[in-house]
Image 1: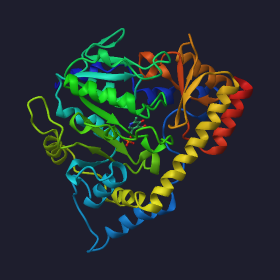
Image 2 (image 1 turned 60 degrees about the vertical axis):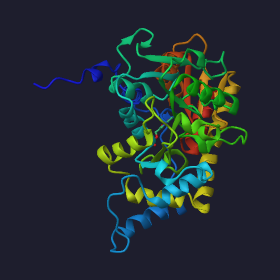
Image 3 (image 1 turned 90 degrees about the vertical axis):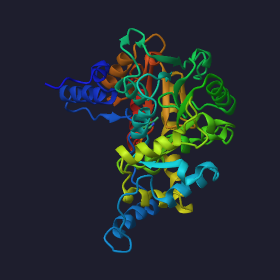
Image 4 (image 1 turned 90 degrees about the horizontal axis):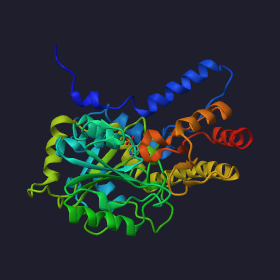
Length: 400
Ligand code: PLP
C-alpha cells in the first residue's frame, strides 16, 4: 500500500475551527433550547453590497456571450491587477508583480513550495493557524514538542511586549510569517515596528510573508496598511491580501499576492519568476466571475461599499469591546481590526470558552488554539448580524 505523507501525521490534532464547531454541536445537542450565537470564526455574514454584486452578475452574464467569454487567466485579469496596484500600492508595482488567486489562505499554503522543506520558520505567537500548519504539511516544522514544533521559532506577542514580538530571536535565513492587523490579537503594528521587522529581515537574509487580509479595517491614518509602506520591503517581503473580509467574498474566493521583482533568493534568483512558474503549473487562476466582482469592488463606488461594510463590522467590534469593558475584562483590538482579544489572566482559554458557551450560549475562539502565547485569552469576532451581536453583548453583561 502507499504510505501516508509523514508530515501530515505531524499535524497536531484537528484544525482549530472544526474543533470549535464540534464542541458547539455537542453543546447544542445537550441543550436543544439554547439559541447559540457565534462570535467565534471569522466568517462574514452581511450580503455583498449592490455595486460589487452587480460586477459579479455582469461577469457571469458576459461568459454567456461570444464577445465577453474568457477562459484561463493564470495570473489574473490585467485590469484587476492594475487596479490593485493603483488602489493598494500607489501604482508602485507592475501587473507582473501582482498574482490574482482564489484567496489569501490558499496562497499562504502554496507559497511554501518556493522555499522547500528545509527552510527555517518564524511565526508570531499567537497566529492564524495556516502559517504553522502549512509549514508542518510542507515538512518545514519538524516534530511536535511540548513547547511547539521544533523547526519553528515562535515569536510571543503578549501584553508585556504590547503584542509586538522580540525580533532578536529570529534566526538568519528564515521565512517570517507576519500578520497586521493581526488575527487573532487585533493588534496593528506601527511604522516603527514594521521598519524594525524589515530591517531585521534584510540584515538576517530572511523573507517575510506579510498577511494584510485585514488592511481595510485600519482607520488610524498613521498605521501602515501594507508592508510596502516601509522602505526596502520590496527586497524582503511577499504580501498576501484578500477580498474576503472587506468585500464579503469569503465564499466567492478572490485574493492576491504581491511578489516584487526586487525580491531574490540567497543565490540571486528571482522569486517572482518562480511564483509565475508555479502559478502556471499547479494553479489555473481565480474564477473570472469573482475577478469581475473584484474589479467592481475597486471602482469608486465599490470602494465606498468596502468602507461601509468594514465600518459595519467595526461598529460590532465596538459594541463587543464596550460589553467586555463593563465586565472589567481587559481587551485589545477591535478599533482597527475586526477581532477583540480578551484577557483572562491565569485561566485556561478552552475553559473560558466553555464557560462563555455554557452561561451565555455565545461561541468564542480559545486563544490557545492560535499558539502557546494565546493561553489565557479568548478571541471575539465582530463578524455577525447586528441583532446577534447586540444580544450576545446583553448576555455577556447579564450572564457571565
Ligand atoms: N489571513 C488571515 C489572517 C485570515 O484571518 C484569513 C481568514 O480568516 C485569511 C487570511 C483567509 O483569507 P481568504 O479568505 O482570502 O483565504
